[in-house]
Amino acid sequence: QVQLVESGGGLVQAGGSLRLSCAASGRTFRPYAMGWFRQAPGKEREFVSGIRQNGIIDYVRSVKGRFTISRDNAKNTVFLQMNSLKPEDTAVYYCAASSGPALSSYNYWGQGTQVTVSS
Image (cartoon, rainbow, N blue to C red; front, side, top):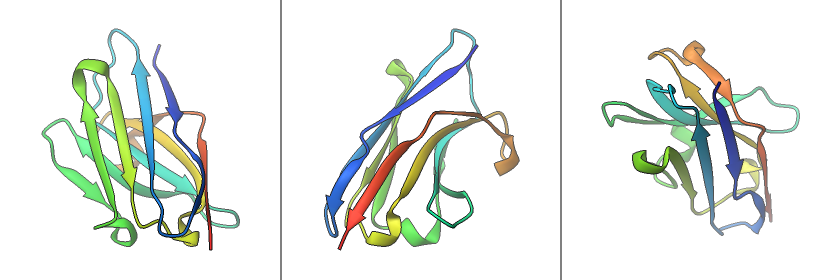
């Protein structure tokens, strides 16, 4: 059994920063990648960032240069540092874990944490 628990969301002004964390549990959990998705009101869920077993990091274009994903393997935790936040970053952010390289391989999901950016 695998569990992903996100935290760190909140309300921040445009230009501000938030740091999300995702703690993974499960003795046999060995994901190909862990990452973050988000879903804004009226929008489709979109991939934000992921970090693979081999260390390769992926970002959606809209956050590149502003967001940084990192991990602490010893603590089975992945982070998303979000800087220079914009109102359009407002969304529920979901931690996810993948069993393969395709986006469809993100099979495990956290409960989501709300990020709201005010102008």
